[in-house]
Amino acid sequence: MRKYPHLSCRSIGRSVLGRSIDCFMIGNGPEQLHMNGAVHANEWITAPLLLRFMEDLLECSSSQRLETITHLLQQVTLWIVPMVNPDGVDLAQDGAVIAGDDLRSCLLEWNGGQDNFTTWKANIRGLI
Image 1: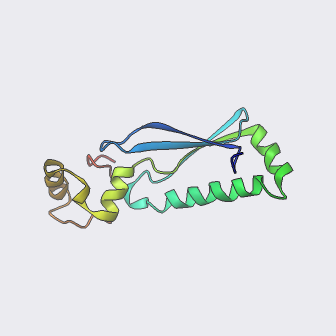
Image 2: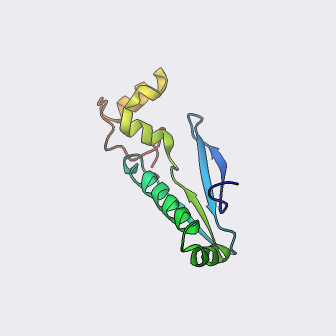
Image 3: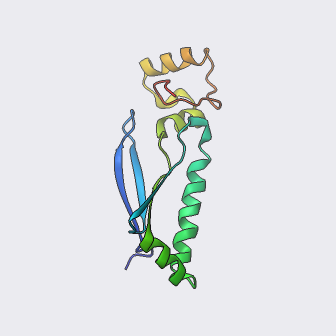
């Protein structure tokens, strides 16, 4: 038996550089709630925060609060995409090393020749 029976996951697409964009679903209720994280590249901290929220919620659903959480998850389905912009997050954290030569040149030009992308908000194509 799985540790978290209320949890399922699927890929909802791929990033420009081919990374999977994963969506986690918790619950099976008719009310739908969607949460996104890491939309802007330099806001990467929202991804681990959403993952921590998911873990805490799921831990509660398998503990002494089972009845309350189970009731909630029969009313609501949470759709959680922790990292909408994985290429941008990698760029903000690791610089343009992730990109091919042509893309790297463009990124450096768009960033004023700087290899420090820690304030980069856009995706890998430079679009916000």
